[in-house]
Length: 163
Image (cartoon, rainbow, N blue to C red; front, top):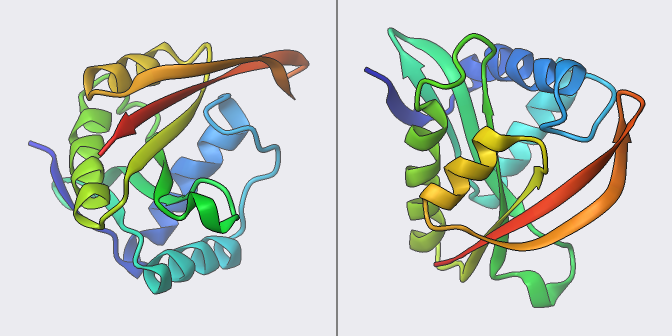
């Protein structure tokens, strides 16, 4: 059974490996370069300082995935809207880990007093699209060919959930 808990500094190596796999092998993130451990530590420290959760899914003490949220956009009018991120380790996808992470993440955003939670999802990421729809997110935008990775144009879909 998969448990969900707050991430700890000791989890960062595994979180980094999961994230870098997504960078190198998927369109789940529109980045090209893997993160360094120093960058990952800075990311974690910023999340902690800002009061934004970093949740991990664990099974037998092994981290299988992680989720967090952060500011949607940098301008003050958006302070009540957060954007979520969920990453699941290769070989663990399709086991309900994303669902196990997203429910508590939505609850944390609601408990944190935020008004809306958004997700930017690659249009070909069917699993993430289904996951967000299942948990009450609605498709609100489809941007065509706004990204380019792996020598192809990528469409970006935005989902939103009012809290």
